[in-house]
Length: 459
Length: 127
Image: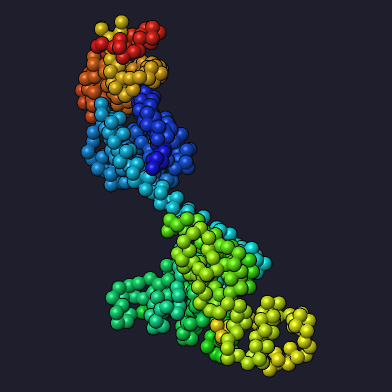
């Protein structure tokens, strides 16, 4: 790998020495050298944040230690090499204590030593730059139009909601069946918001035993309960200035819900076993694959917390309602899998595409991924055929038909499906299915049909 | 030919980049435009007994004198620097400063001559 160029500022009032050092260092094409004759001139350019600066200890308008302090304040990443005309151990020790990175005496070997010192720093600087570029890479990766694939109208709506959520600090609640990518959407919101430079902390509420969740979220003091051997900061504090993503929020214990509500309202918390109040600055994103409204009705989810968390609801459509997106996403996973496993690039044949389009994907994108990855392995050529794909549920069970379904149940599922896909427009569905609207209303009144996004219990 | 009876010697500059005449010329011209003036200032400062200024100038000139290896005054400039800083044997400073100035001005003359004749080539430097 070609080394990154590093920028070096030389601050030296002695014109001859400045030219000598400048020339000497420019002999290395990777060193970008700028020369300054006074502290004032240098400070005017310090916003360029050089990687390295060499300071002459005695300048007409400043002294080395004074200037060192200014560099530390204005450009803390810059490494400072002090060059001095005299060997004074006391001054040198003092400068090292103040954070100078090297101290070189002006004599015959000055250039060589400076060269060595800079080469040593270089590795360190290169690593730091790599880290910074990797961080940027992560941000790029969440350019959500790349991370989330889809052209269907349902997804376009989701994209516009993500943008809206990212531009403000509003709480976002993401709903959708399992495997629809709720976590990806949460990340997309975070990494496109002003908070992207701060942490994104994800907590799966269902994965943490309910007794531990409280200290997991809010932290605890040493000794606050058996096993609390050290002080620990909670996820809320960890996500300071960033985003806290609470996945499967519906699984939260009702007692803890009360505490969460209080914290969200007061914007402050105290760790378990502590009286100290800590201010929090966290954007909350919650996700669930269950119908919270339903849970509220059943008394399993606090109504006040429900409204507090609802914020901007983003509903992710299930894959079977996303039309052509299935093929787009399948292609993406195939390319990705083939590349990662050094396989020839594979494509889907017509039959396999049909098979994908007809399948209901109860496990959504997660299932699609596993199906196409297996198909990549099963196919020996550059083409994936229908027979390479092993679906886990029955094909074409658009309404999850199974053998034990009665005709009446089938009819209800059919109507419900049409309602779901037509934004619960009863009149439209009645027209489409050529049945009377009063029949539909009667079935709705009897709770046979639902007029809102519902969790399919057959799923 | 420069070098035989010259007060200066450019070996250290050649060590840095012996292929680059432009660099050598640049350093010489920067030297000529600053050090002779500094040497005169040194004499004046010594006459006026401004010891801090004497120290500052001597300190700065020291590195240049070493760079061009002007041996005749390499000891003198250090004595002046040290005495001015520690404020000891101040009576010696004025004379030494005058001597330093004379050597520097002579050195500058030589440099100018050689510079004009384009003699700054490592091959010609045989001091």
